[in-house]
Amino acid sequence: ISASLCPCGTGTSYADCCGPYLDGGQRPTTAEALMRSRYCGYVLARKDYLLNTWHPSSRPATLDLDEADPTRWLGLKIIRKEAGDSKDKVGVVEFVARYKSGGKARRLHETSRFVREDGHWFYLRGI
Image (cartoon, rainbow, N blue to C red; front, side, top):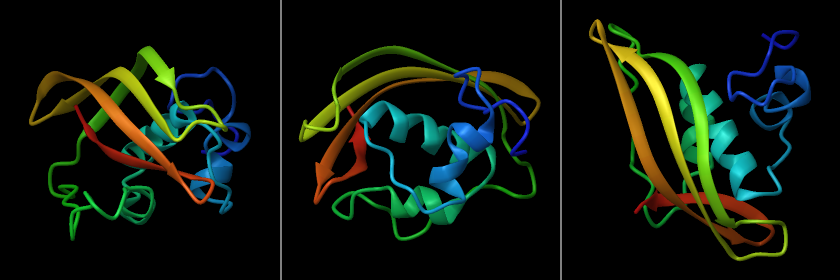
């Protein structure tokens, strides 16, 4: 996947976009970059990355990504963002993610809240 376009929709290669976060141990510097990389985490079924980037106060004990009937992620569109830059403590990203599950096309429309602690962004929850 590293040479192909990043699933998050930036138009750049996975290796130059979300790959360094999911595969290289780097941390996103903005809430939007974390949101995009978490979308890639769902596309690639990377439970480890998703749980590690979820704030401990709201993180589930386990994450069930149904391997028997995997979700096919079709695209991500960022609607708006508030704050969430490298100097901010909080950020909000509203997005729509399209996917197919159980033979049906669906849309996930969420406004996500992110927090930055010790220089690292974490997904907190949808609001």
